[in-house]
Length: 340
Image (cartoon, rainbow, N blue to C red; front, side, top):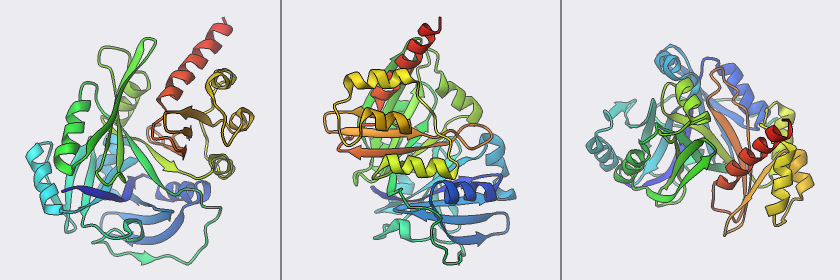
């Protein structure tokens, strides 16, 4: 039942044209093929080892009404589809279904997992059981920076992290990679990172502390109508160049106050980029016992302000930027105090 890879991620959207344009023009994806079904139509996009399906149509309106534009399916390959389906069913989190001949199991909130047998290059194989028509051979509009899907960040209800981590262990053979509790003044969040045995599928599960102000996580759960994918983190080899090109293409990134970089200078141990480089690009930096992590988060391009994206570069680091959460909070607090 062990999961091997993510074969594709499917986004449900009200405006397929705009969503596809964002990924192609702003983020460098290539439009590969189209599929038209009775109640929906989809576009297949690729970049590096990442495969995205963008879908709209009347057949997905319930999801959109409940959650807004967002990730509806994270399709995974596993070594034994039948066994994984049976394990998911035994976990009792919801019905296991057959859709278009595929086994589809519950994930979290409205998100499902379509299961496929393993293949040698999952990101090069179009989702099965749909009729795909290849698009014109159009080269990418900009330089391709994204190499793979580093991790999927999932926001769930407070007090339920252990339940979800156990589910992914029992149904898919995931193990707990790390766990952390971050307190930020009156706010707090829990996180558990779960990872497949292949180490090619990583979910960062985050949840507000039910006993404290959950801040942005509570806001996400309200806007999203419950648990869901908070962001997709795309691994890039040069984050400064990737941010520059994505920003030129129209991606809006979150910005850090100047005081963040003042604090960063106190703990940054040097590396490929200088503090001035990072500040100019508004890139965040963290480090752990293995190396450095560089990251930047986009603003959500969707009406409900839920799903957003992360660009991440790893220079040996295996972490997920928890020190950045604290540093950003401290920087914002410093700015507020300075302003009186």
